[in-house]
Image (cartoon, rainbow, N blue to C red; front, side, top):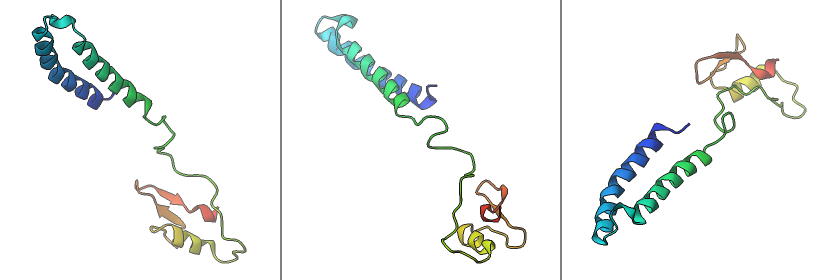
Amino acid sequence: MISKKTIAGALAALALAAPLTATAASARGWGWGGPLPWIGAGVVAGAIIADQSYRPRPGYYYDSYAYDGPYYRPANYAGDPRRLCAENFRSFDWNSGYYTTYGGERRLCPYLR
């Protein structure tokens, strides 16, 4: 889907380029049939295509899910796993075993599973 910023930018570029192309083309006797309007349209179309092609795929870079992958303990760790939780999560509650995410959701520390 094309973003509003892309559409607004394309319309602004077209609005700025139209008077320039009309006066330059009219001075040469071409009217609107000269190459300058097509060059401007090509630049705008290229910007729209480039905007769409350089976006990350949905669910690739900016995932909104919580990380549920493996959490590894240090080698030969025999201590209390709550200590690892306190070291890795600033909002860890020692008594309940939960930490608070940046979104405000409370989750069980993965080292306690």
